[in-house]
Every structure is written in C-alpha cells, then in structure tokens.
Figure (cartoon, rainbow, N blue to C red):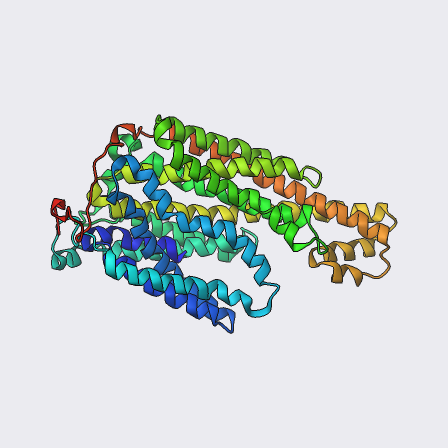
Length: 488
C-alpha cells in the first residue's frame, strides 16, 4: 500500500526536482526499515518498519524505472530488465532462504540485515556516481514548490489507503461486512473526487495529466497502463495457486525440505528465463506489438491450464508454471516499456509513477481477490465433502465435524479428535485435499478474465516499434555528454 502511494505522490515530483535525492532518501528509508525489522521484538515494529520500507521502496523504484532514459530508446526494455535485476535474485532465492531460515531460530533476521548492508553500499555508490539533471522540466525549484499538487496528493493518499484496507479486509471478514463496505465506499468516493480534481481543475503540475490518458483515444498510454495493471494481477494468481498446491497437494509434514525447495524452482526460474529470452532476442525478433500480444496470450493460456492441477499431475503443472512465468517475465517488462514510451520524456517520472501504481495496485487487488475466492470456495467445498467422506468411512456426525475443524490445524489437532480411526482420518484428509483442488481450479479459471482483458488492451495499444531508435534522452550531469541535457 505504501509503495503504491509513494509512487503516485512522488513520481511527478521527480520530474520537477530531479531523481537524485529521491532515490538517495529512499535508500535511507529502506536501510532503516531493514534494520528495524531485523531487530524487531514484536509485530508492531515490523508493521511500522514495513510502512517506512514501502515509502522508501517507491522512491527507489522511481529512479529504477527512470534508468532506461539513460540508454538508447531501442534498449529501453533492457533498461527495465536491469532495473528489475534484484527481483530475479529475490524470486529465485527468496523462497529457498525463507524456508531454511524459519527452521534455524533467529537466522531469519539476516534476511533483513543482508539487504541493509547492500542498501548501504548502494547509498555510497549513488552519492558518488548518480547525478541526473536537477530540473528535468526546466522549472525553478521555488516555482515547482508553489505549483505542487498538494490537494491531489492528499486525496489519492486518503482514498488509496481506504480502498487497500477495505480490499485486504475481504480476506478476513465477509465482503458484506459493514466495515468493508464503509472503507470501500469512502475510499472509491475519494478516488473519484481525486479523478475529478485532476481532470477539471487548472493545475500547473497535476499528478495524472488528463492529456496523457486521452492521447490517441487511449492507445498511446491508457491501454498499456491497463495491461500493466493486469499483468501483475495475473502473476499473483500463479503466486497464490502454485505455492498452495506445493503445500497442500504435493508435500506434507514428512516431506524433506530439499524436495519442497526443488519444486518451487519452476515458478522462479520461469520468470528469469522469460526475461533473459527478451534480453537476448527481443531486438532480433522485432515486431514489438506482436511480442506484447503473444507473451500476454501465452501467459493467459498456461495460467488457465493450471486449473488442471491435482495431486497426481505435479510434473505437468510444473511445466505449465514454467511456461506461464516465462511469458509473464516477457510481458511484464514490455508493459513497463510501453507505459514509459506513452509520455514525453520530461514526464517520465509521471509514467514511472503510474507504472508503479499499476504494478502494486494490481498486486494488492488481485491477491485479495484470489485469496477471497480460494478461501470461500475451499471452505464451502470442505464443509460439504469432508463430513461426507468421514461418515462414509464409519465416523459419527460429531467425529466428522471434529475432523473438519481439525484438518486445517495440522496433525497435532487431528490426533486429538476422539473416536477417529486411521481410515476415517485418511478419508477426511483426501476430501480436504480435494476441496483445495476445487478452490485452486476456481482461482485459475478466474484469472482468465483478467488475461483476456489484458490481451485485448495489448491489441489496442500503439506499436512502439517506430520509437525504438538509437536516441538517448538524458545524460548524467557527470557524464562527458552532460552538455546535451536541456535542463541542468
């Protein structure tokens, strides 16, 4: 939530004041947050530090999304890949070190101390080397301060906070709960007011200039922006379904840790593989719009095929996950490249902000949607078939109900169910697994709607092929070609 808000509030400002101190201050915030979480003694400290980290991460990624402006336009997609290189490390090693760390006492703290050290090194290098233009739009500092969209920042922060909180509550309480309805109604109401403010007020420096969205009937920016939201929404369907399948369908308490780690690799390696393929062959293939459409369609197809997952077809699902994540790595990089090309280069901070909002908003919304679907469908199905299976194996209705309540809690709780035989427990357990098969199938089928909509948006987007030229938009102030910058 804080990252998405940070992107929006500070994105356009980096076009006014330069990106140097935004990314440096972001590094400081992330460093402090990692230290606080690593040394935390309670969850309140972790929550507070996570909020600080979210703001800092938004500031840092603003500059990361701006990195491609330092490269020739034809290499923009490679600039996005470089900016996301740390993500490759995270997705590959994160699940592995996480599963190991939780088995070794306080070792998990080094999952935060390590990044803190890396952030400190990054801070030193940024101070030394990173000197972008100070005023990308050529507006003096004192004038920019006066013209900032303070009201828009307040409206978006308030509305987004309420909406995100309401969406997250849907995973905890029924969506009809008055708390959920109040948060969502108030939040979306304020977001609408924010949209009206940005559209109809004569703002000097709007956060979301209406002309960006209206250009060429949305084909230049709006449709790529929607695709950027959806591509991340699709990622979270896989990121919820596949790990859940590992935990519930293919492993149990007796499964060796090494095996659990091995079967996490197709998802993580697939993403990296797709990104590397784009890096190596994107320019050679050309036909950029067809790449965009094709990668989105392949991601949608193989993500939908994950609906076939069950305990007996692990190998097939691992292949499908690898292909789906490879297509995601390709499509996600191109979506950000499209968004960046959708605005003048003096507004790259705004496009970067909106790209970040697309990524993190899509992730927050979709994770809540998919978790709600999974929890509702699985629990409803389990309430029906688990007691039936237990009683078919000879259990009384009270024993069957007790097994239904104990199964989600693990082996220790199951052992405490009085009167349950091994046959009854096995039957109830098989039915419980089947309820997850149905829940996961529903999640994967629900993702098809998002994927199809995203593919349509790719088709409606303008081709970026003519923009893939050798031109470099911006040079660092300490570059030998710094004199080519229009504004210093």
